[in-house]
Length: 365
Image (tube, rainbow, N blue to C red; front, side):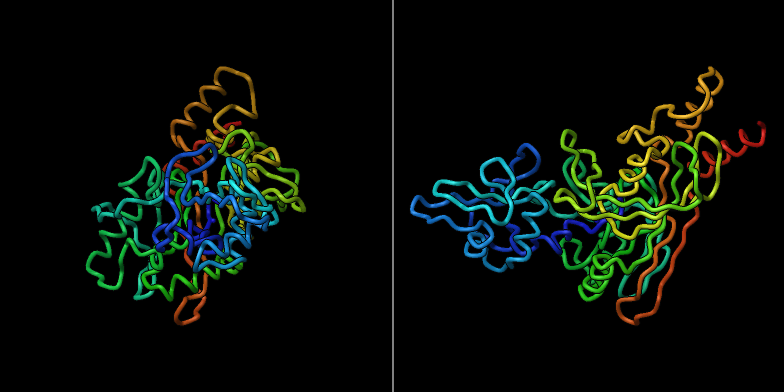
């Protein structure tokens, strides 16, 4: 799902049918483990003959497919004991096989909350909203209220067809809390199915504006590399070889929009949509996003070592105290009419003020 990614509806393509809410009778601990939360587990009988874990789970998880189980294993979600295993792992008597995900089991109800929404477009099938920085998109660990989903539940409270607790409607993709910009929401199950397919097959158009550290030699370029969890810090994503087994393939195209010397304004076009894709890819090529604390962009990485320059950068950080990233454009085919839809949003005030400050500095040199 970057910054722009499919939701746990990445359990759309992963394992949506084996979650506890689907009636699975195996024990459900929901507890925090190192590296994730346990959603499902089963202890292998003492008389079990060795068998591949994907086949074993096919027999013990009714309603799911072998393909989904294999995708879950590829994503590191299938564990034997406390370690992730591949699909060809042979289950042994006494093994504890579990499904471990990055988020806790949802055991709360989404409650409507009167939170302002900037609705860019709406019809009977969908709506497009412009999310401000600082607003969490979806309830999760530590953020069970005050999210965009709670706001949607309030906004659509009179729509009898829309149930905010029904995973077949609602958010199709998400962006990080401190990233601003456009999101599309499905109001019907049919619309969500169509939109999710478009995101999964990379036929949508998603362009971001980002202020990053450092100058670029060329105006255009492409970053490729699998994106997966950082081996030491699970709050970060890392870039791995494109032909390797770790992570998921990711492609980011960038174009230079404006140069300021120590920093550069770029447009990033997503060919894929992985967690923190732009943030991880830009750091990978030596251009962390400006003010991105998680990926090292909140330090002075380029420019002078003078007191006045350090004061200037600190003032910039104060103007935009979050990663300077905005989901500016979004395009897709309407799930009902097939019409090409395209939306664009202006940069928010904090990024506009930040860029204007850099422009004034550039003009004064």
